[in-house]
Length: 324
Image 1 (cartoon, rainbow, N blue to C red):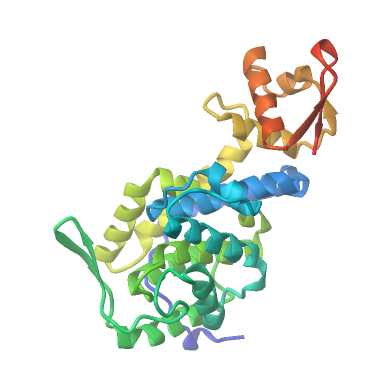
Image 2: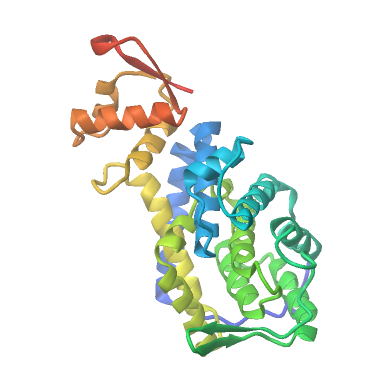
């Protein structure tokens, strides 16, 4: 076990908001683990993995849809930009190997980048050897540390990950921010930061392997980049920690608030599958979502069949569904 003297702890403050979010997340994690994760079907896990890959790559400008990613996952041919298809194929391979990586290993980190960026950049899986700056519009938003400092900065960051006294929720956010600040690669830093945070979190909380919190980052990209920028200006990751913990908290909330009127059909379907009812009718489905009209319930069930989450048998009043 490392002593605190050997660990260079990156700077951040524990704010009242961070404490509130950690408390809220911890409470939700217990509820999610009890009612959701253990009952999740392989098909549902697959759908969440697709959402994760789609959102993380869309942030970087990938144009493929969830349907196209599903087709690639099923080894089907897809028409689309060659680069976009390769990005998805690489991401699928990487996420399928998630449990094989050790989050505190810089060697594993480089191996992951090699898989993610293979065929997309020169020398994938190696730290950059050039200086790099991030330009937004006509302004230089961030100048990363010199290339010759990268191996040493990353080594310190991975030493920090071995700190057993640090909360995993905090540790994952700090790593995500600090890695983005160091910008160890010429390309692929954003998707590596999000993947590695998922890896760190899922090591302690298995639900994160299939919780697509990248979807919310994708939906709030301006806030994501603003949190990075404000943390840069402050010289510590506090703002970014608050942002990411808020994203995680909301992602867990989406799973649990299944009666919320703004839930999408897939959210309702996912929750219903998690209940583990083997055979059910449309009426059973509507009893779970009491404010749903019969027409909306029918559309949900049709989509569940199309996604291979349900099998349907019988007709008209005798129609029943079975969870796959």
